[in-house]
Length: 214
Ligand SMILES: CCCNc1ncnc2c1ncn2[C@@H]1O[C@H](/C=C/CNC(=O)c2cc(-c3ccc(F)cc3)cc(O)c2O)[C@@H](O)[C@H]1O
Ligand SMILES: [Mg+2]
Image (cartoon, rainbow, N blue to C red; front, side, top):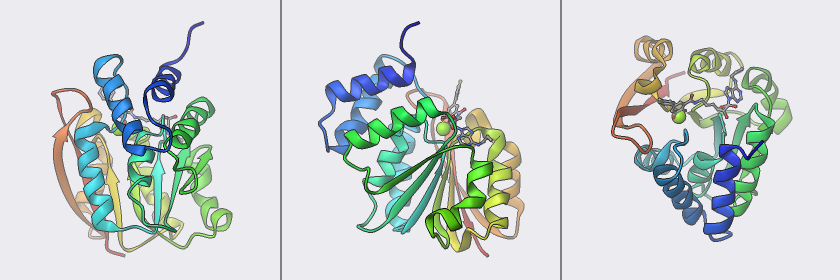
């Protein structure tokens, strides 16, 4: 019974990244996952697109579905203006614990609310739990079959406003065909594909940015 991949990623971050330095945490994870062990982080190439969309959106409230080790949590949180908050939902307690320590190592715990549980249970509780009105940006990167049901749940719970941005990872690989069809054909969304590459590999993947029109 050895360690897990998330633990090995955390140990590398704790050994090689500078405490309080988000960029060093990001590059440590990218270095480990490109040279030692692949892991399903959004990665550096798609990460640059994520960064650009966070900066152009200037969100006050961000939701992330699927924290995993906290790589994209750190990428997003480091770019938030003072007072902005990132709520990230992770159903696996082991992954959540690793992510908590990665986020702490980056010095970003004040900007991040990490909730342990299933999105389908927690999304309906967000308004009363966190006194949230609407999300300005949602980064979707959890089980690909859950992208569409959770998007509909966000609509039903009144957590999206005209102009809210959904950004979905992996719309090509592994793919989220039902989600893609929905956001590209629904009159309630203005959708755009950002072509890129699967993390740490030379395989096509991309992000889909979909603006909710209300
Ligand atoms: C009720 C289930 C849905 N609700 C949920 N609520 C909260 N957390 C949820 C979650 N689903 C999944 N999670 C968590 O998100 C994470 C899951 C992410 C799934 N991601 C992928 O499968 C994925 C997979 C690949 C991949 C690509 C190519 C390949 F050959 C192999 C894998 C690349 C990626 O970038 C990916 O994101 C885990 O931490 C899991 O515990
Ligand atoms: Mg992904």
